[in-house]
Amino acid sequence: MGSLSAWHILLVVLVVVVVFGSKRLPDTARALGKSLRILKSETAAMKNDGRAESDVAPSPAEPPTAARTIQAAPGDVTSARPVEEPRNNPQQG
Image (cartoon, rainbow, N blue to C red; front, side, top):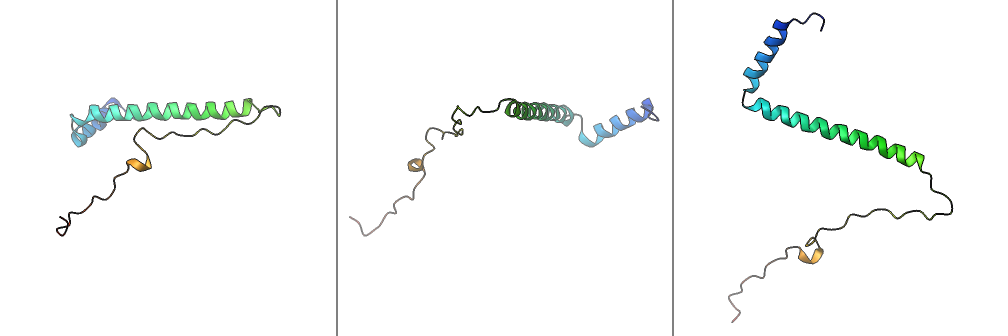
């Protein structure tokens, strides 16, 4: 590691523990690990998508496939949206 000795690394670790606290370090490391796994999987998926699209050329005899659509969740329709409640009118019966 060049000019870094064990004492330098120990001092950096000590400063990190003092600044962040020993209770938050495991949670921070876990969150960082999850983020790196997500980044790695998304990067691999992007590489595979680009490779799959360039390898498979649509033949002229095949009709193009329809675009994928995202379906609404059950209950997520316009009629299920909250509407204004009727007001109590003291003049009514």
